[in-house]
Image (cartoon, rainbow, N blue to C red):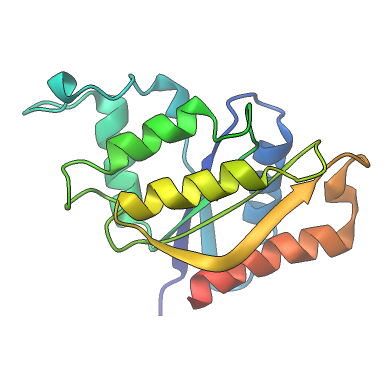
Length: 175
């Protein structure tokens, strides 16, 4: 039996962002039987425009659609920007939702986790991302909720928090 492929979309473009480091930690500590791949190039996607989504699709969008379609599960790891999901993530979901009813996210098990240096840990962004993915046709696993506050320092130095993050990946695979 082959490994379950989980594709991670990171909502922050910054190379050393906390959420990128969470994604890398999950990749490096994935439970047995789970292969985690981090999607690259979200910053290269043009803003979704139906005029660009015709017979030829921009290469970054085509590659993202193919990568998501080939994954068994999609996990978003994202911070919160101004009370919602980052624009780069919203744009990726826009590309993945088309063509309507047939996009790469349709029927795909999907979850959202992440951290921000706020008391709420990005919960609004995570709620908005789950809603947007649901509308795009993903099968959002609602009971996977890890909106981790990072106000106290490096959460990745806390093994209990890392275990919670890894458990979220396992729950997505089990869903």
